[in-house]
Amino acid sequence: MTTVPAAREDMLRRMYEVFSTDERDTFVVRCLAPDVDWPNVLDGTRLHGREAVQAYWARQFAAAHPLVRLEGLRLDHDGEAVVATVRQGLRTADEEHWAGTVEHVYRFGADGLVTRMDVRTVS
Image (cartoon, rainbow, N blue to C red; front, side):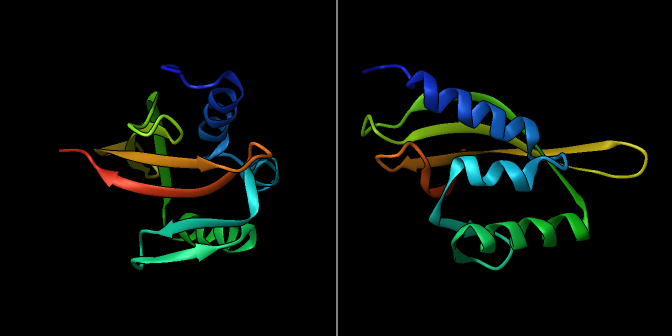
């Protein structure tokens, strides 16, 4: 298979659409596995479970308003993981500040939910 399965593409596109909105917490239940393994980029550690991810996002939004712009989706070299090319930024009171581009690599369980996400730098 050379294309991202439609259900995974639809879910990830929706996840990026709602990340910067109040829908973020309710949507997490529909896309992340209960025991999801997620990167804590701020502290250089890993988070485990939906609640930990929600708390992490709440902490991010309390400090600043993070932005993510999905620029593309593709299958990883293993043909299983989905790679999202993402531009990152922050919103301030008066404007948006866009920074670099990274790759978010998603792995899925048999139920179609995200079981792991990793962040890779783009050179």
